[in-house]
Image (cartoon, rainbow, N blue to C red; front, side, top):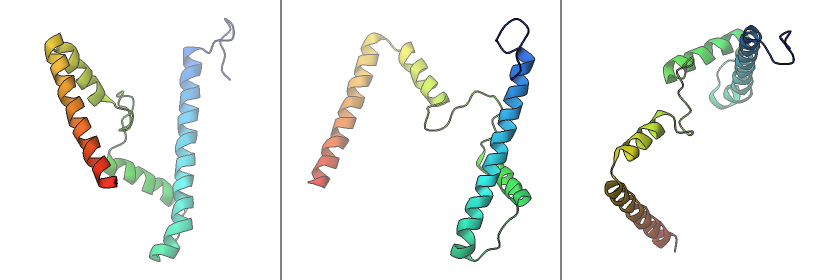
Length: 124
């Protein structure tokens, strides 16, 4: 590892180098995973040709471009993790008065309870 001379803490330059190495390694592993899945599944299912590692890299880059997941440090989180929408809701709730906030929460609890009763009735 890249440690500074001041002790066992990594220097800022060392952290950058370590981050770049880990990022590149993860990208290369993901490309190998794309190639493995393509070659294991699609030739039998769809009768397409097998792909090489360089084609897998191109396919991975193309999928990232088409589906928009190149963020490069803009601070966006995954869809499951909340991301910016979560912060917008927190901002809206914090800007409301206490009475508005309790009315808002009660309305959503009622809506969720209605859906829960409807789902429970369908399962019975």
